Image (cartoon, rainbow, N blue to C red; front, side, top):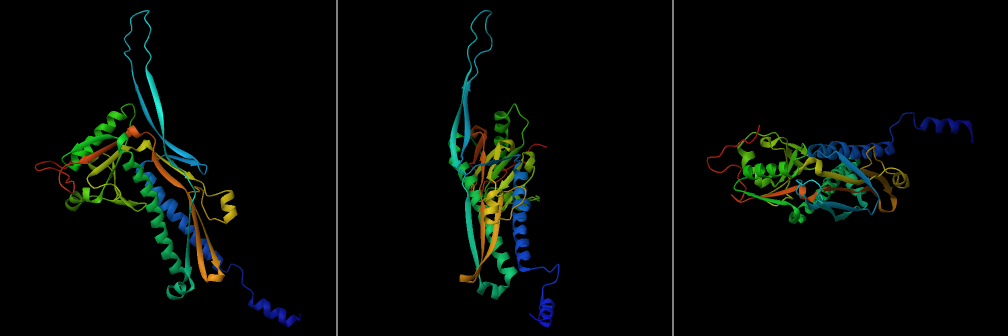
Length: 317
């Protein structure tokens, strides 16, 4: 090879510190992980008060618990046999935590029409929303399926139901200092939000209100039946997850973070002229004790009006 040709190659060689397409793809992957884990999932666990995030192995069966029994009379005459207080803890299998995998592809035509970054970003955002929806649906489906174990409450208004749910939780967890979290349908709370200034926040695709009427955090979701209010103690909620780092990340070149909640990898598929994205995660929310759930039913108006005629809109302090 002559020296002139070598000089020409050097002239056209990439400069140091050039931002390449591979670097841009990695930046998008990091942005996806940050939005899912830190901007969304972290906000949800904070709003729910979830302090227990438990890593699990693939295929592990997840259980919730029900405790039954009776405390015998503690007044016993001197020398008499002290009666046994018998309790039993029943394990109820709820779900098997499994690795979930998703794949999407952006075609050359979509990139040509909208541009590479825009085409990939739009579909990334939609995919985040759909994954969040599936995780939410799993948790709320679990709640609605387990109403047979929950403590039932009824009331003529949303305010009354929330207050009674809160009161039942104080009884159920009387030995603990708890914070309450309530789950309601948007139409159950809509009338109140339409007439009263309330600060709402968003997390994981849901709106929530902190310290609502002094009774705890209210999570607003359409996946709860209208007119129904599920309540529990924040400490009763657990997040189980499969970690996406380690060997799995190495095998599939997944981008993840220190939490390991989700992994993503973007690759180019030449034979189809498209950019493919592979996503993996395994996240399940459950309550630990079924008896620590209260389900309230608003027996008033269809929208579950907050206050009956002549009532006041504040409970607690």
